[in-house]
Image 1: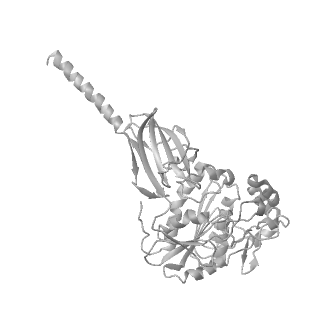
Image 2: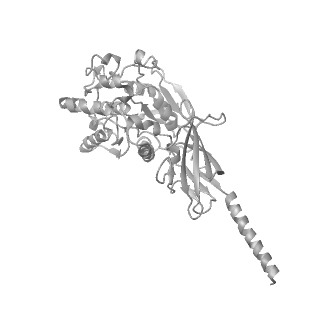
Image 3: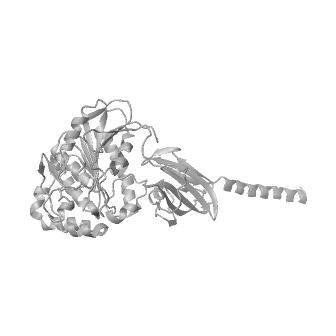
Length: 459
């Protein structure tokens, strides 16, 4: 081969190599599975492919989220592996809004921004951008939906603002009753009602308290509900079951209670009174009935119970320092109020204890040891110990670094929950992501033994 031909061949090879590198760069793309809409809480795999080996890349995530809707955002810097891939499940960021390999890290670590909300963004859309230097190398999108569009919702007569969620048609569906926490209202119903109904359950969102602080707070949201958390009627669970039994499209003989915080306290008390309840999911639970609260308690601290049954207030554990905490507002040390109350009144503990070991059905307990509202981790252990001694089936999930907010699926922004409830955003999100599939498996096993499989209309 002549010198000229050798030079020509070398030029062709060099050009091919350059074009190959350019082709690799142009092939940068997100691979997101499952494709399309995903019921939030089910895992989403995000891979960025086509990078140069060991290249640094910033991935940004943005989402329409919250009420009122805002743009939430997160970002992190990653180093591609030898194949030019960043896989969120296995690639730990070198800097950014979370640490450690975490498939959901960019999802739960989002915080609100002041960016204008684009009109074309749908609820649950998560938009991803990859930046190599200042260049946008790839873009992708997934949509985490809260529920199937086919879920139907209807009011329940006689129960203010209560809602029945269910998919249309099909055989009678087992029931899940959602009991909210101390904030009251319908947020828990909206958060979980249609979502659990999408899995084939008949779900009741049962509000039972709507805060009324008069001139010291916002207007009462649900006028027909109690405005003070005093003598809340456990009996309404029995009355709700009576109504459900009139419905041919639900199976009221398979009924679970699903509650967090004060809702867990409610659920466990109900279980100790109604052996026909099928199962209980109690998140950040209490082993005691606690003192009630409301405007009328400012001058009568330590005199009223949170709950009643058959017209009688239940024995309760008083707080210490509740009125001072009320005056402190968001700065109140709720953990100290509960701890000091329990320490000051050991003689009242036996009467205030919820005898949930009498409940024959299975119970799932979920709690964090870093809870800053009350010691749900220790109280969950107390419940577990009493039920274990009685030979009762009990599943205990304790997350040492998580706080009060263990109820969720681990794929939604959680940073706003930390200040009051304790833990860290990452610990709370990891607890939720670990517990949520276990909760679904528990409900499936206890409410549908030997039944047809739950519908799986989405990945």
